[in-house]
Image (tube, rainbow, N blue to C red; front, side, top):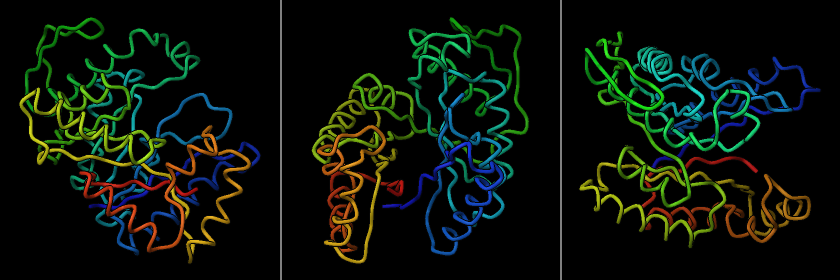
Length: 289
């Protein structure tokens, strides 16, 4: 099992925005020293807080990230597939072939309105953008006919990614999203708030979907994104986490938090991760709570 971190790039607007990147630089340097396998940055738009954009931020962190895998997450319906394919191919060249893309649908109605699209169209936009990018990375003289994107005259992208293939994971929790991950993706990224029981049921559904599409689990990654609060002892960890339960955290209820967060001392957290690994998880992305 590989271990990475999903780093926060959201800060209050009262904070000097330059501090965000200073913090990220220090975090990534420490992660590289400690031997983490990967780092990820998320994707949000038009937020009330500072939120640094994923592509320039992760590009700037590439040179100090050692050998870590870089996992930028994109809300795919908001992006032009040709431009994003070019940018990600260049990022893969810059990083020496260390990019894996996490792809998600997005959910904020205001963002869809601002980007002059709709939530109703997000699935079809997602699929077309995903397909166009993969075609451009893998071959020359590409043509495509879709509802949102079409080009009859053949086009080619250069430079192509160093990674062959450049892997793409699909994030989501609804059954159609899991089926898309099984049909199109190179892995499935599990939604952060799921309890262990839901994770195990989701993995079984993903396995069944892979079999339906004639694909194989050994070729895929199953990625657990999980909030965690680690302390020197179990008692200390649970006591410190009570503040999260009382004040709320990321919109989760206290009951959901207690079941879905990794909380406690080292032995307790290791036991949790070993259970997830036995269930099929190949990669964990921690978010520090």
